[in-house]
Amino acid sequence: MRTPLTVIRQHVHTLLKMPSDPNHGSIRIINRKLDDIGKLMDNLLPYTLLSASKTDITEELRNAAADWSSKRKVWK
Picture 1: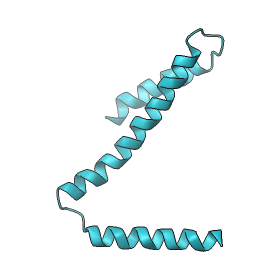
Picture 2 (picture 1 turned 90 degrees about the horizontal axis):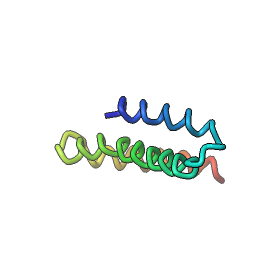
Picture 3 (picture 1 turned 180 degrees about the vertical axis):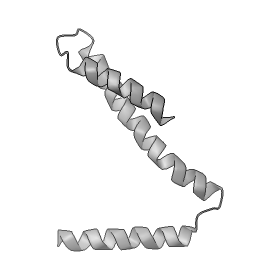
């Protein structure tokens, strides 16, 4: 799934280098939507693993809390 998105993204980036294109605004919107799709794809695998019960949710929560806690210390 990522390969087709990568090809589309490469073409969009090429088009974004042409600001005089009358469709530049639409191309920027397409680029933002590709970012949104990328984020959805990033979340799809963890969701799939969780829904298939192949992931220990307790361990995931512990890891997330530890990660958040370590980042919180940096902000102090």
